[in-house]
Image 1 (cartoon, rainbow, N blue to C red):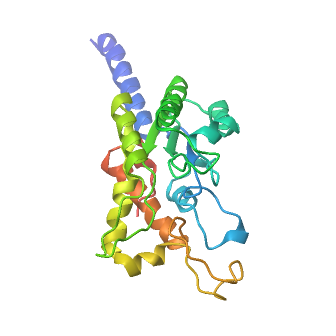
Image 2: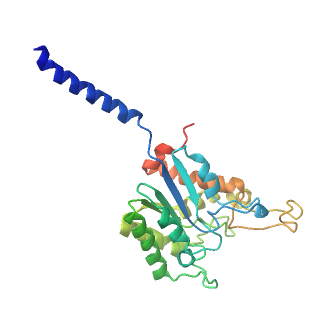
Length: 252
């Protein structure tokens, strides 16, 4: 009887050890790549207090996450590809990494060299999704963050209606997770109102900051507070949509 029990005890012991290891085995290190424009990008100290939301975003994760901010000022989906910035991401991308993709500000402007017609914009987003998935990584589409523009009645206006709609269409078509930053940021600005919402943007009076001796009125780019508020929207959506990434956000 004792001999019969020995193999069973051995198997139970091994099983228990494997279960314990599954609980304590450290999480795999991953990278979050940020692909986008000036509202997301890292800033030179000479442009302070202008701050891209990707800068505070990178500080909210535990040691298993590295955030690589490849976003650049003035880029569209088109120029992000032609300048080789997208290739920088795909050359490094590995399984279980994330790619957060937010364009639109420069794609939609017909006066800029970065202009990307609607059909091409959608195709570029599809390319980003396809090549991310080919590496067994996870694409996340983000609608362009809203500009600050209120009408005479004090209501926030849509500033990316067409191109945000295109992102939503591609996300649904490709079954990709979507963070609707356009809608969420407009809700934030509306809550603050026409005057208080200025506190989120790179707006300065003459002589207030040596980087902008003549002052600055900018309703597109954020200061430190604004960038953090936008980053908090992204983090909230990560948790709300129950992305696996949510488990790697620092716990308070």
